[in-house]
Image (cartoon, rainbow, N blue to C red; front, side):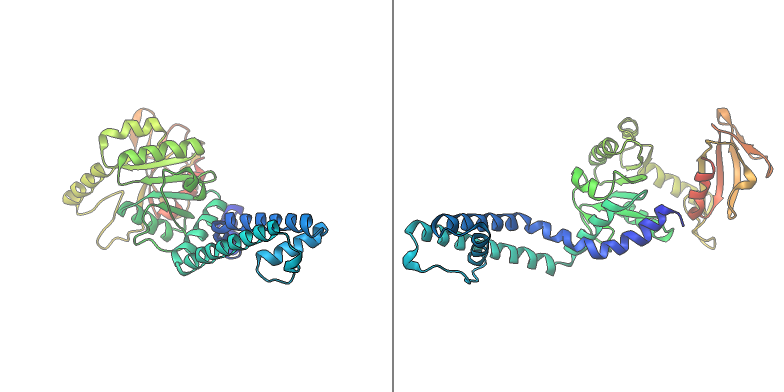
Length: 335
């Protein structure tokens, strides 16, 4: 287990249970600051009219603001100005208490608020994970697969819907604060599938601005916008309509969907992978469970004839078949 895996799967979940709930209190931070201002005002009043030292004045101010009443000078000795100021600060403090209690209660009784807070804490502290952005069946399908293959991920969606757990952040993906909460700055890749292609394009531009090396995969509804997404920085653009057409045509021709889905008696954890080669590697060094199918040479020619000691070179591509959970090892091996 490398450091990134240890951090994402062990340390982050452990720290999250301790630290994430405190992010709830950020919602009442302005009220707490205003209470501090009220204490300061009261302390200043007691120093001015009762001639108390600073520490005693703060102590008296806290008593008044909290309405404990442990310190109360005789009313006959209090000038009218002092009484008016103290009355106003007490009323002000009581209003703040009501606001704080309402905010905390409404947050605690809503379980989604706790889950969202944990997801935001998790996302902002993870490293080299996948950020899934958007909504719809494509997002739910991606999440199921990532979960199955043990890939670290965080979801950012406008509507939680059927998505559950503490890896789902509910918010507008077009808001950079939500993208940062999802850990986009430290992520290794992002999958974007919004209901509207223009929203997907805007999100693509934002994630590329926040993290230029990020590998971005976009699922689009309108295939005519592929060039726009490429220009925006998407590394891979998948037209949903085209993919659906290929699936149905392939199923009609071969009773299967090679490269995407193996149906029937064949296990569905077998897929075809297409990898760029960035360093010289022997075919025989591929992980066990991965079977090479072909080498795509310079110029795009397909070479299916090779041996275990055949070396693939930078600039070529390798087509393999196997369990997708091993694809990361293949990618690392090929540089």
